[in-house]
Length: 394
Image 1 (cartoon, rainbow, N blue to C red):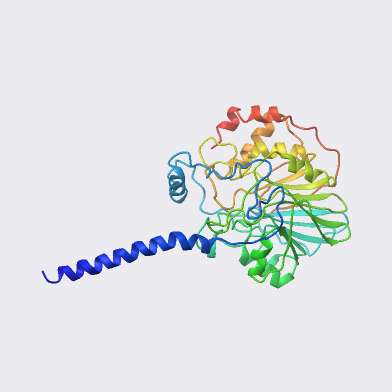
Image 2 (image 1 turned 180 degrees about the vertical axis):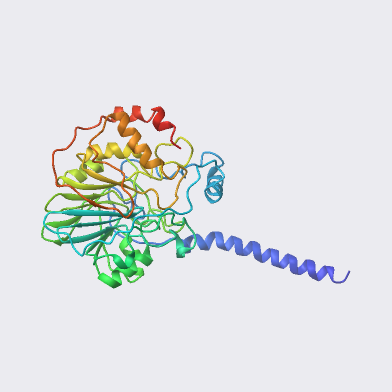
């Protein structure tokens, strides 16, 4: 019996220290995980501490959190216990071996996977949001794992001249990949405000720019940082400490547009991108738009219907759909984004073939600028979202 009292006393002390540690963690850890990536004057999208979407903030709600709140959503994401369609564990892809350079007015594009695309034109080798890591998450441990391997092996990449990084989510800003590319090629890396701080912390030089600013690579080739509609975070409490963006790269034979990761917002940022000159190739997301059955969009991610509306506003350029088929980030099935895009186009009568799904690793020769097809009315796209061929897709 004389052993019971000391055990109870030490158990009480341990419990007390556990409670104290938990209280300290609640107050200290969030501050530790917060990061100040940028200091600058207030603007129409920066309040002196955090960036925001000037066209209305609809990205704050955790997608799919209507049932069971945030904790319920995180549990369903971790377990898949929400009736979501099955995904393959691994898919086979073609492996491209790109040429050293493309010149003479030609343009060549290869979808490497997710938001990573190699574009070669006018002697320029450009990568968008390069991610070669197998896991998109902190320390390469926590986060979604690749379903599709990269369509180009990293050691088969030609020398890279330019990289654009849209924002700091792990499936777009991959420090291990960027570190390797920087050490190998020392390309010009252009990103939006604050993300350059993250890159420099890893020994990677980058140019951070605000919406509307230009960075010149060489005469005739500028990178214009353009607005889009998203949010940012690397940890838990550093939300919106760095900016997100799309990009226009001006080229002699027609511009390149890369949307980054985005919701639709007010759509006007697509009009702005088109104002810099005709777009020869646009790279638009179509996936990760559904976090509950039946959703067609979220504030942070456009679905195929919204992608068509944005494509309209950019002058209906040749467009490569991306942000699907690599990392499972959402509820919809593996093939749903491209199949839904095709179904909406068929319903709306859009037959130009200028906005067509591509295979990972298959090189694509981009045609020269030419006559653009007629626009597809927004109301018709909305009506097609109710078409049985579209709503049947999970």
